[in-house]
Length: 326
Ligand code: AKB
Image (tube, rainbow, N blue to C red):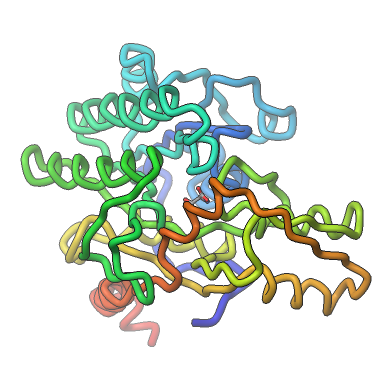
């Protein structure tokens, strides 16, 4: 699959009156995916500045604060979250709050609260108010007994991290609420997300973000995974495009509610070689973090996302505007 640097969309446009009102929960700093900052800017550009509300428990940096609506929201505070949804007439909820894999292992109690209790609040509020809900899952929802090369959508899922356990729980709870209460739950299992303009966020795949920062700043990079550790990765623009397309897809085109999404797989030594093509003086050394290495060794090496590809092809095929344009 080709990785694109430009997020060109399947062209669904929203009029002034039918646009979704989106609330994005979570994570301005280390609690979060590197996806976040770009996601805000991206959703705002697409749906209109005032129709995307960013929320967190932390004070946002000024460029985020001034770029559009920001609101205090604690996903562990059910009443607060509900009030925001009601007062702002939210229709779509994108739930990014989560502690990632490595940081989750260093604070299991907090990870359990944020990733599991927080999810319960979000599910109940979304079901109660008829929201469309997106919750990202991850390659970390698989474990050492899952097939690793490739990993299909449906197979054994016995992760060994609190992050992975909480994400399997999120997938199953979301699907249960869908079948039981008709909740419009949507979920993509993200690979490691690579973005040059965000900081690593407590994940196992963080090295693939850190290498760019360190290469430019110091010309040296110390990798905490073994050189041949192969993991699925995705460029941020591709991830954002896919997420919005998943949210926009008509419900009847979705054959499942939780899909793998794939782009590429590489190892630290392969990434280092590519970066060295641009910065030949970059020095790369290895100092293995045993916790992260054990996590990475239990995760997929290659992801099979053929079900998602088929669903998106059906979606595009079913859209008469696209059919006419072609
Ligand atoms: C992590 O490494 O924990 C995350 C992920 C793959 O979900 N980036």
